[in-house]
Image 1 (cartoon, rainbow, N blue to C red):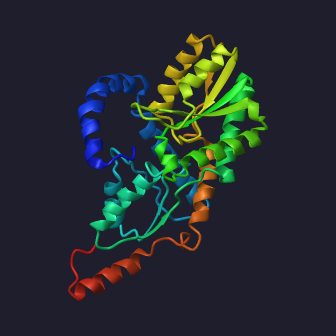
Image 2 (image 1 turned 90 degrees about the horizontal axis):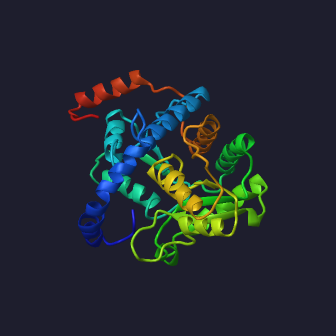
Image 3 (image 1 turned 30 degrees about the horizontal axis):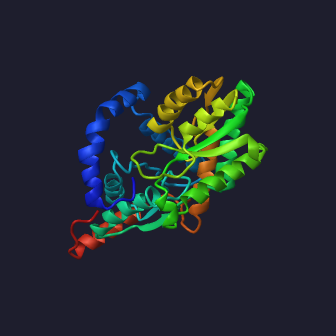
Length: 318
């Protein structure tokens, strides 16, 4: 999502982007599709289930549900289901490690839109970023170190984050700063000198200036400089998707190799790695403090309460 006035964005989307990109995007999605379906959807489902199991093993009686900001299961649809189950407390965790108004806040907007048409609202908490939480940094480092143990180390590690228009930084959005903080903490954890890594931004479109440096031109320049091997990781993506599996693992690789580079390695996202599911469960556990999540739901008391309310004339009870 890009911060553009809705009428203007609707016109750009329907008159320019979709007609041009629909065919190309379909081919790209087909290239990354798995027998189970969309990597983003199945990866998110896997992570949700793994985190749910981990929290249950720690004694928490909670549901872990996922929703897609665009697509299904939708935010509103999942919240409707939880409301029908008499869920009274919701912890919202957008899977964007770095806060950005165009992504994190957009997810919160979707929840607020649902709340605006809902009579009985749940108690709501929001974890709006986790870019510098040690458990997240450690999980990234473990992933990369595991890859390097099998494949050796690169001459340069590129940390590619999703791009945003440069004006978002000028408007006070913390995204750019949080990306750089994630990169710095990860480099420190990996014991990489400043010259051994670089932060770049991908997925730009249009003619306006976006956050720089851009990923693909940077890779081409590194190849021309004689850098033999580059590894690319995408710490801003929790789950692998089109932007990582196609744009980086295929297109960016081709850009580097065709410019004279020697070896290109893409290191997968955290996805549903066991160590990440455990760390993520711990992260959520900290956010659940103060809520009684260790007592199982008292269904008998709930039924008594419903019966008493109905006896007094209540109807349409969720």
